Image 1 (cartoon, rainbow, N blue to C red):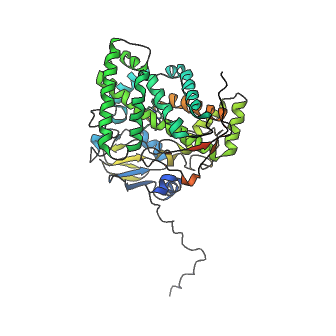
Image 2: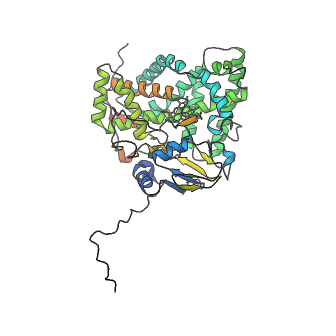
Image 3: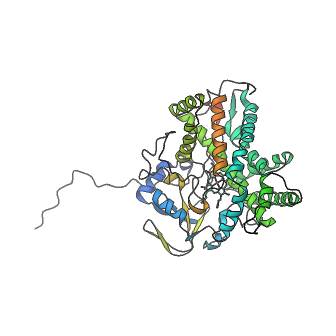
Length: 424
Ligand code: HEM
């Protein structure tokens, strides 16, 4: 007879239960849930709050591969349930043909044309304007000794910056600010009002482009109209959709870079002091690596934008049927211990930091040079002008916006010793 098995001294390893996704706790701190998924269900099918079912890809290697996999289309016609996903309001406003919704060869053509106008050089020349805007916004609250850094700073900076760069006249920029406010308040919620305001912005942009065509200037819209590739140009409709995607892709992301970035610096005093010392010494190296690290550690874009399997395929050994949406979880991939040493530690000097915060492959963020500029100027100016900046709220009580794609704070209350700007 076979003897009964010895009772094992080590209890069987039962994985901890699967974490709840998309709850309030998850919005506050999704990283433990992502660690669980990476470990136990790296390519995981889930029902999103909207009711749509999608795959979440959480390991770095799988994420990077999926972002570059052209069998995953950006075009929602490949979704088994088209119409349920994408940027709120874009469909009814007739704004579907933009970079984030198309594949090669159409994507290649549009990206080539926009890259002729939205160049790193144009961004570098825009730096003094970003500094001016940043100082002006800080002037607005520096004497008060307190502020909500989202409302007073992180929110207005990117929208004014991109409006300026595009060439939207100053007197119209507050309409864009209102529109941007509506988009971030209701982006994941009631769509009627959003659809109306997207239509209004589309109408405004189309008219502005039409007017500028008669009278070209130095701004980015004029650059888009001029851009030519072997005799090929953007049509007015394409230029309108391009301006829309630049506005849309560039404002909430940058709000979150400044918001999440400042928040994490305030929560890591030793890192913040290190950065302040380096800025005081006139160095920029730590600022540059630091902004990249903040993007990795608590980046603005939690999930890359929608992708759809155009055929049956497999990711990380998991079969995915054609028509299913695939969401690459950048926030999970960028904390993967298989890629980053001590991934849950914020290290502003991190060198080996090929994070996915700006995506990867042909849809890699077109606005990355502008985002870097704004992030670096915003954080450096805040820490220099308000050196004793501190959180004025219990971190546990801060509310995060619950959208699916983005991760960002609703408010960031701070206090500091009031200061007056010394004229430069
Ligand atoms: C694409 C992140 C700022 C314009 C992307 C993608 C990511 C990203 C992850 C790829 C999406 C995907 O593959 O699904 C960010 C972050 C930003 C930022 C973290 C700020 C810190 C900006 C700004 C602009 C911009 C300021 C423009 C003014 C775009 C555009 C695309 C894009 C046009 C689409 C590119 C394409 O499909 O070819 N961004 N972005 N972004 N971003 Fe950004």
